[in-house]
Length: 232
Image 1 (cartoon, rainbow, N blue to C red):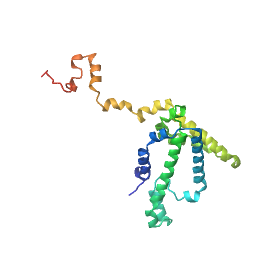
Image 2: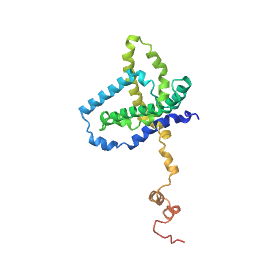
Image 3: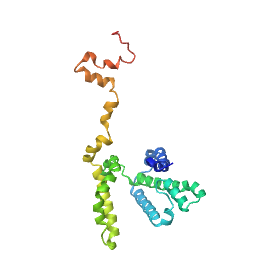
Image 4: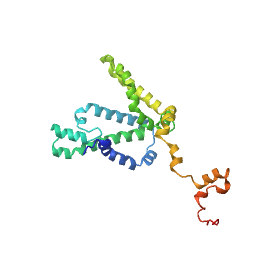
């Protein structure tokens, strides 16, 4: 079976991470772990160490699957890199990827993410829109980005990192802003469907009907609970 259909390979590989996130007692942990300058410093250092580990440990990280495991196993068996016993144990590498990503999420949420109101946290409530629109936005900006990467090699490294951070932050802010939510909100968060799919409560129906036809307001709803309809 083709595990890549409907991104099934990525869904199966990420499912343990999803379950761990659902079961993790985040609120209780936040209450027991106060946010301070010391904790923020430790979080920044931990993120730096993980970044160094992933970028400099290329020989080790090259054998760790990114998200979907099925294509890596198939390619490894066809190329001879993986033996059949190695393919059966390939899930251990995927488990390491889940632990690594889960660790980065915990570090960010517990010690780096602000706990009081701020503009990034306000925009963070609408990350659905950047998540669904960022591929389209990056595709539109691809010609401009190709011009940037033609800089001289001596200055390209630092400038590209700086431009990437500034541009990606700006792009996420724009995609989470209210004009974008106003345009795409009816499609991504169709609250207007509730009035079509969910029946109105009896009290709301009565209030709406009393103004025009009080005698038939909510007649279709039937009698109140515990009362007998004596009209028959």
